Length: 243
Image (cartoon, rainbow, N blue to C red; front, side, top):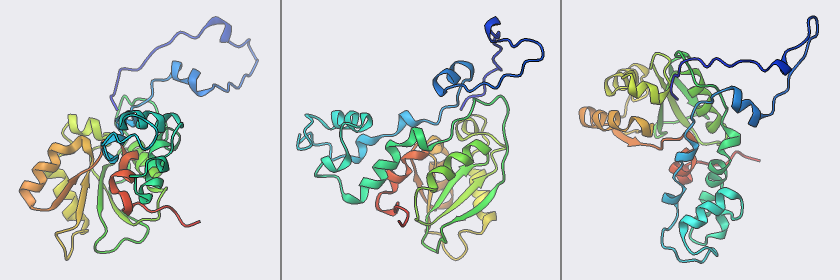
């Protein structure tokens, strides 16, 4: 989510209101994109292909698994059309495929937006509950909590002090480092009584994750780049909310 210089746009003369006239504009989303550069939530980096059998068996009606992925994205196929996809993945696929609608949209930032740091408990976690790592940018927090709102599964969620940078910018500016993650994890007390908890690091911070594993011996797992891929990545650990 890069921090570009502010964009200056000339307001067309035909959009200027007459003196004393109050106008409330309702701008459709496609037109809004013209006026506002939106941040990248990396939805296009969701790797659906890795969760398919990759055998090109054609039993789904498509000649290749990659064609099946394209049909899934376009709504021409559904996960159940592939006989090799486990039923436990039907719901995670549904969540990931609907990422454009689930994830909040926000503009590219020119400055960091710090939110709260620290540990958050999701759905009453226990000793064996995995720990998700994220940053303390307010928009990043909105994204991850939007995805976590689609499951009844339990998680620990730790917002690392990235000085308000989004995860991608935190990696560039080195505010999401192995040392910062180690420090915040230990301060949180989430590993009290155990050192074998699964700790899932954002995919963009893979380098920090590998360094952390070497220096601490913790069970570090490098997760996906896009938060909306988490349901697929966690598979049967991602349970649909009770209906």
